[in-house]
Length: 145
Image (cartoon, rainbow, N blue to C red):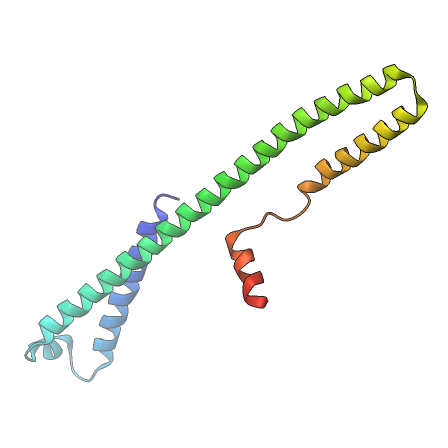
């Protein structure tokens, strides 16, 4: 993953230079005749520099895309960890409440508490089933509105 920007940049540069050389070869005459004309070596050097800049820009964009992907994965892991932490503590508290309701031996209190606990457990288990909201998906929703 660390080499990807370098590979992309070198790939763009080499394809660009290859196309430049191919186009020169397709012109009538030889390479020597093309380079013998005035200002052609300078023009060729300028084109090579433009290809180098294109390669650098593409490599930088590949680097930024990799950084954004890693950042998104880290945020997703943090959200899952936070969800697990919340589930653990809320379920522990619910079990204490349920035990306290059973200690009262009042049927109505036990049923009410069991029903509330079931709803809370259902809500906790269904929270993660919804897709994670990403900045791109929220932008699409705003454009659609």
